[in-house]
Image 1 (cartoon, protein in one colour):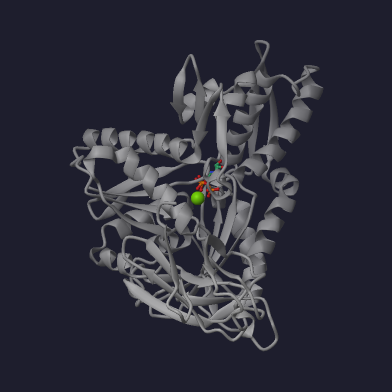
Image 2: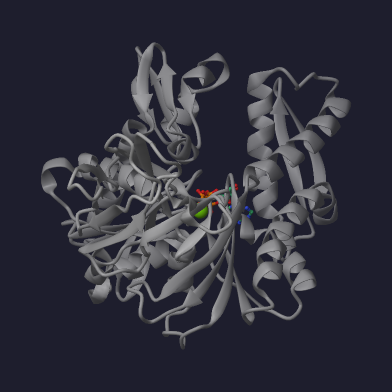
Length: 490
Ligand SMILES: Nc1ncnc2c1ncn2[C@@H]1O[C@H](COP(=O)(O)OP(=O)(O)OP(=O)(O)O)[C@@H](O)[C@H]1O
Ligand SMILES: [Mg+2]
């Protein structure tokens, strides 16, 4: 079987193709594996619900949540005196996912031999983050040598799952993904020349997700139950946890269109306390959150609507099930068609469909990002603008070797530093202050004494299919420095 894995911030999911459709490989009623990791000397490593259960009260200091967010920051975690890297934690979560997938497949009499995996990652992840995610998966699979067939961007996976017939080229789709911890928005374009059939044009993110909606409900219910019972809930970890579980169940209840209200029911000191929560109240106390996510979507829409026709918005992520989402989108984006179908499975389903596509190998042969240098040599630029000049452009066939000419900034310069950046930008050059570029490394070239500022230097980049980026900087006397960066596994 081929597996699709959505490594979500809150609930990683795994599925496979079964009778022509993606099938979630989880037990009935199970939503995903909570992305929680716990360690202490007594219990050892715990993952998922076990980690959540163990990490209550003071033990929360040994609990790691939302590890996906730590990938970008490169943070590591000290739990009960032991240090864990993000990669080690991710590896354990993969293990739990693969084990679950194999158990469920066995129960369903699906062949449990894993032939390949496709993993989805946020659109903003660069080669280094993708490398970390796939290295962790490879290490987890260990001796079995299961190939990671591809790493796919979440909004692209979502588009694949929504459009099962191929779209004609140059259709623009806005993806609104409201998950557990983040709201990711992206503009994708259908593009039959790319292996995935979709290209991400732009993306943005706000750190708001279902958890923030839960927080608002928790505050609301706590206040009412404290007044009714005279019991102080705030500060009592056990009571707070009960209220949170109730709040989540109320939130899910209220996404049923046939229900105008739900009853929050909490047991405290052997007595049951209840309070009704209407959908109107829920929508009111969370309206500021919804507004911020819609503003984020609006920004991307406004930035591009003049240059391309955006016809459809697809809703992705578990929190898109809240009825206020579709209502809010319809109100704000009345010109667009809003699509919403099983949003909580869109990404994992897309990854699974993609894992089963025959043309997938093409992906390996294309540069997923552009690579260039902002060396202080570029000042031949007429207005001395600070720029990064791209040398290898995203989409180039691999292996590829390209070079560009540069010169020192001043007469007598002793060293030229070629700083290499990875980005989504496909322009020949772009402003150095533009965000979303990632630093790969530096190559320093020593110049002969008294070199003039018009000395002709070359910077050559070579990228192969294994993700090795070789940088060679040279000057006319033949002196050359080279460095190699493994951009897929740094
Ligand atoms: N029917 C529902 N009604 C309301 N909220 C729901 C429903 N189903 C799931 N959710 C919420 O969706 C959130 C999880 O969404 P999702 O599985 O898309 O997150 P994720 O992909 O793990 O995280 P992220 O996208 O932030 O990385 C949780 O807050 C959960 O409570
Ligand atoms: Mg998600």
